[in-house]
Image 1 (cartoon, rainbow, N blue to C red):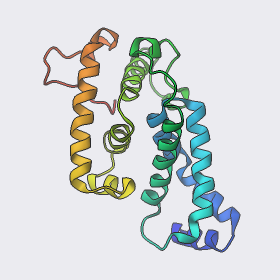
Image 2 (image 1 turned 180 degrees about the vertical axis):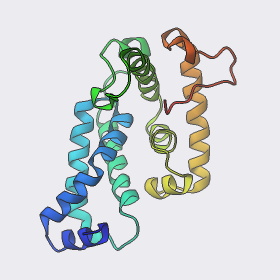
Image 3 (image 1 turned 30 degrees about the vertical axis):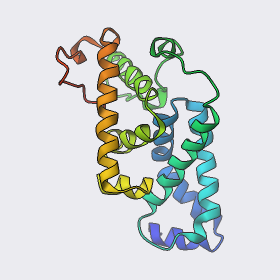
Length: 204
């Protein structure tokens, strides 16, 4: 069945059909949750919670594209997780980097050991830098610059205007650039930038 048929079947209570939708989108949902939350266990929990919410709310889906509808649930669930953890003190970036490596499920097994180590180091510092952003900046930079979604798709997912997407993204990029500049010594050598206006590509 194509996606529209799967959705229609799931709306009629066909759980295997919904499970097929889960299989199609679980990696995307997890990746978004991981980038926003920065913790593999919480990201897995948020992903599971999101699919449960999606199944319960599926009767309210009245056509359109399923992906932005689902990702809106994922990002809102991540917001809830972030707000629940706000009572915890914010650690410094240096302390965060000591916690461990970037999640291994993003390991490209086709690359050599040296490239993998370099990419892991870069992804680690970028992820920890993203965690220094506020929840709204995290979401927009993850959706646009990490997942490669358009401004229009991001606006639809987050339920905000196109202008708000652009302004939040501009502030998020500027803040991320400043954080990376403050910790250039933690970046692999080839990604260090000598001038303020130069920034590394966070989609590496």
